[in-house]
Length: 249
Image (tube, rainbow, N blue to C red; front, side, top):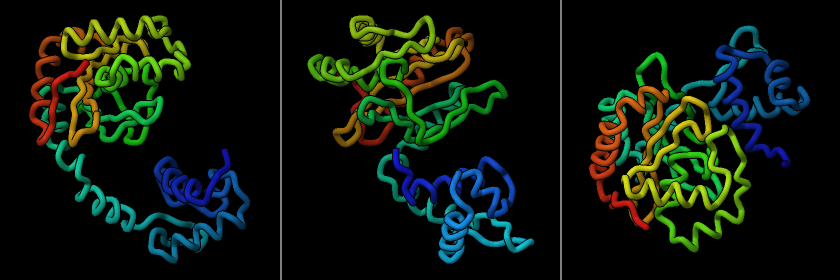
């Protein structure tokens, strides 16, 4: 895939997050895998727009708070996450586990919001990450609100890559799992994507669009508290303003 200027710009900020300190022009050029001259032009543009500033020595750069201010302004007016964020935080506090809000993007699950557990041992993820539809509790929940014909169309495109011995690697197995989980009201992933990582999810409809919320954590903690987590997740979905949390066939 061709790298665009937008890709490189975002990669600059991801680089600073990974490096964790001011970086020189040559360091950033190596991180971006582009010529120093191209990197210099990109950094000068970001500096001129107020997103970077030069620190001593002159060739060392670091982001300003401008990106954070822009991001906050965007987040404050987000019609979805601003409504759901308090519910996600309350669910995290009640369950003690990481909570994720997601939607389907093509043949993937896209993380829209992540509220991490405060436990020392916890599931860690970032907004913008994606997961496989067939090996995710969120994927199953999102597939469950589609018609059988719609799911069949999606299944034809999926690779059904096996991630662990428990991964559901055929359309028949995945359809059977969705049907079984629908009866229980929550959709589970017990070691199907990562060994010893368990997740439970539930779909909800907000403004006519399908989303899903999952509680994710270490296998034993999820298994030991399964009933309590199911109840907490169902309550949270009902608490989302303007939502229809009922699982649909």
